[in-house]
Length: 94
Image (cartoon, rainbow, N blue to C red):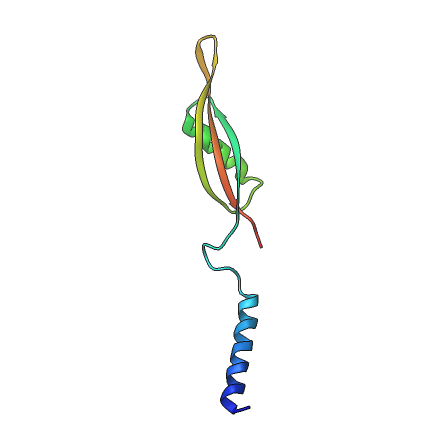
């Protein structure tokens, strides 16, 4: 085997070992999406914020919060509470 072939094989072996230990590049991640319902007597925005802030207390690496549905709780013909259903994504750790 020629010296260049040996060097090339060693370089390829090193590159494979390095690639094996390399973490995924940005964009190569796995996320879970879960739905939460936040409530507020003030506004839908406050309800959505409460849902995200409460989830942040127990989930790490929150990424995207998508407001899926807005509704209101009605009592005696008046708005008693604003509700925001939020689809929240967070990253799985490898």
